[in-house]
Image (cartoon, rainbow, N blue to C red; front, side, top):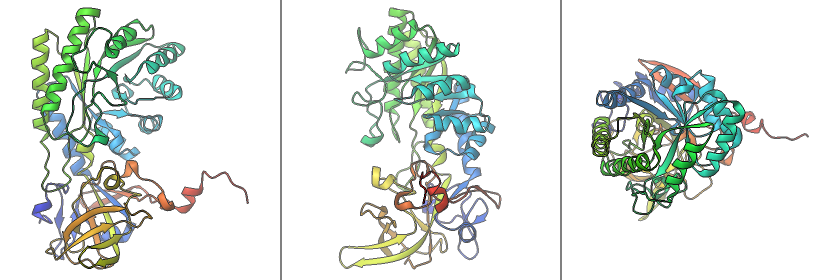
Length: 449
């Protein structure tokens, strides 16, 4: 049976309980997984991953056939998940030479790779050009000139998109807002978002079209993440398609490719459930088509970039409960064996999570506690003021929706080894990343006794 109906929206779709009340993911008893692999442990549910991918693919391609769903790999990337995305026919959004190297290592189709980033190095651009990356999303004038030279030296004509900042507020956390005027990303439209003579965005169109070794294919924008509302996408499409039409009229620009980015939200708490992929697709495609028809533009190839909304719910973090500190009339802290080294999101973004006891999954709540990490920072708090069953040392705490941005931002703070990852499906558990060792962390030190 389902472990906790109230938490069903944030748990993977396979979540269940055993007869002795243990949380099951992908047919695997989480207490057995913790015993075999230790904690902290990140468990990814393969059925949830593939199911989420299928929902996005169908939602968009059934409405607009010429759509490429592109996995935003910054949410979480490892060789196993890159290979899974390739198997599912997705593209990949990378933002560094390292992410590109992972894609190359599993023979990911390079024609389906988009390379983002606001300060790509010459070496990274060279690696992307030599790998045959399908589109490089150019972010600034420095990169336009740099890439033109790199592509020329390689003797290729590199296809590019220009990233435009459309000055649209997505109403999300300030640290994850990327499409407003005051952002480090993209070529700026004038303050009212309409585009005008001499705008940086217009200058970029002119310079890209004049570049000998670049082929300007279209436009890209990204508003931020996570976005729970439809209006920002609709406004951004109106601004971006309107800008494309102005550039057609002034400079003969042709919009072959268009991407409104991603930023689709994931469920983290039971009271904040995001729109379904169908709702995002309807809003994005519907508003894009209205703007295209208004401006008399042909329908371009569309790419969308879900990352968090595919990976987050598929991952569950498991921790072992340890010390307890009760401050009468103030707060009770219960510490676990992980924290900000494997999940810095609560400290960085004030991110909120749910939790349940994996070894007593349906026990009723008895106390209000704050789940603290083990690291040497007062801000190392995973969940503040949550109602849970009475926690005892040795209990196994499960934190759902941990599949995105936890592991990709994990560190070795306090020289803590980063946790292992297990992929589960139909009762089988496969280790896809082992736990780091102390020797791993010291391997790059240049030191002689």
